[in-house]
Image (cartoon, rainbow, N blue to C red; front, side):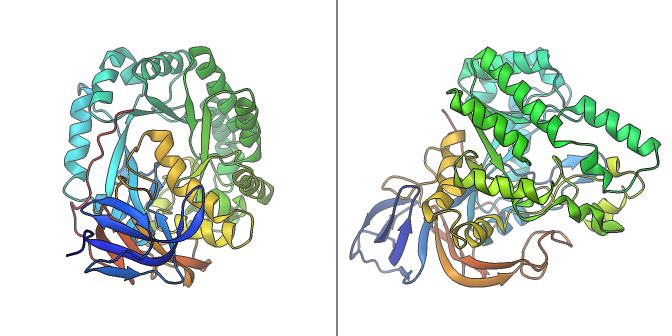
Length: 453
């Protein structure tokens, strides 16, 4: 009788550090060994394939309410789509209701997710203005496994600079990770009001009301506040070269700042907003899409490791939802679907072009995200780690469309994008979730990850 329950044979194992021919032996939910000539009663032949860790997306919004809308992917449809795309772990968000304690909010969010998730997940705890008076609850939220904390510099959840300082101090004191949406809300509000008053209401005015310079100003400001406090910092969804410059300068000074960008900024430009009607509203997200020069610089920043990871900020809304804001771009619900295409798309455009190597691809999509947010059993192919593994066909071609993708939304901003390289097997904790285009998992198969840093 074999000592392994499953062996992935004859593939090229790709980690953040190296690529090499090897077999991967799985026992139960864990990787038992990486070696040669392994055998088991159940084997997957990965000849000609790459074997990578499961991809990790630390920035998604499933079933997220925004005003009168809720993001179109629920916890099952969104995690099922993620599994088809090679993502085996996500991190979503908790927003506390009035008069609710933080741990109760975490429990309520888990009650929605636990029966539905097809892959493993964790949660960021949101700290908005309403949480500033109860920051003494941060240790309990941390103990409940939400060891990273979301802070907004925009929207109704915006923290002013003094509140940011207090929130960063509270997170620092428990050893948590602050993750920040950095934009200058006062400038966004003033510019948006000015444009609408002048009759400039179309989606094309969305990026013109959220200038790259002011995104960079906000990033610089929160870096300075975190430096004063003595806190690490992770900056979400970087859209432009100006923010990259500020982050690179901070890291050059030895500051513990990390940052991410997203597929929408790597594959789309702000020209997408210039299309008439709802088509111009569909790609509205924040920060907005930028010109091609910014897109190029983001790819260069990933190659030079001035940006550390790629996430999605997956937050899809339907065409009907987006259409409600056509008379005032400020009312368009912001967000795009990317959770399924991310891993393969970064390989297709990044690795196949020679801009990134295979190991950087795995680092940015799998290993470094796990390290930043304390997913200590994820993101690596090594004995003792969770058996979250992808068998990836580097030659498989997919044309992205609503027919080929599995997200619960009636459009995709990447319609017609040709991808070369796609996952053919997705394994989560030793269980095969997707194989050759067939979903073999079930709702509730995923697990809440109780992190402790």
